[in-house]
Length: 143
Length: 143
DNA sequence: TCACAAATGATAATCGTTCGCATTTGCAAA
DNA sequence: TTTGCAAATGCGAACGATTATCATTTGTGA
Image (cartoon, rainbow over all chains, first blue to last red; front, side, top):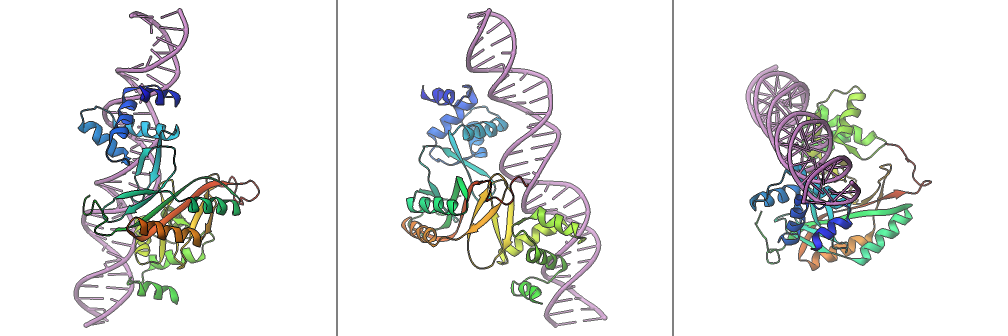
């Protein structure tokens, strides 16, 4: 199956916990999961893993490019599958609803700015925080 | 003096610790300070404050608009005086050197994107992470 | 000057995350 | 296949940043 292939080509042993985490990300409704989310979901579905292992696996997956880590406001890291296409995020401060976007104009400007400042760009993070309007926010008053 | 005025109009009592922190930000070479930075610098200069108070004061100052908080990668919050003009940051991953920039094209695109997604923008954070080139990085191998 | 709410200091507690170490498990070579 | 061993795991302690608790002190308005 392709999952163990993913792990192999990332230079990681194919272990049970790693497969479980990978499965979870591929089958979860919510694409953005924190370590705690992952841990709780696995436990809830009867999979027995250690929280420490979840943290380790997430970090390894980030390193090997399987996942992307995001540091939103609020301290905790959130991960999502790396589909190869970079994108940024817009977050509703009311309900936590999250949308993705990509804007080539912004990307281009960033490259330019980095160059002007004598930096070689490594990475960047752009988060827009706002409020959904009542109608357009599908998760209003969730939590 | 204008400092106590700042505090007054922010609806805060003019207390010694608050004045000390405000002074520090106004006189410090480095404009971006973490709670620990503030604490250590005050202690070092003979000012006797509690770390808890530093945290409290920084949060209050953020709330009242005197300071702006940034959450860079690495977990800890960093604060700077709010000069009224919004700007974004570009950070050197090697030496931590930090530069500020403002790009109206990016700002405009963000507004547009938020609108397209049905969000009213509240705030946003954009950090570019990169490496200074050897010459242009004035703080290379600092820490 | 007084009185009282608000702010402080000291320290315990919390939260997310990492570390140390004994045990288990992929996996490759025999 | 079995075996050996490095790599991965689980558990709990440890950690760094931050927040909460609560008794004591301090601005400030009457």
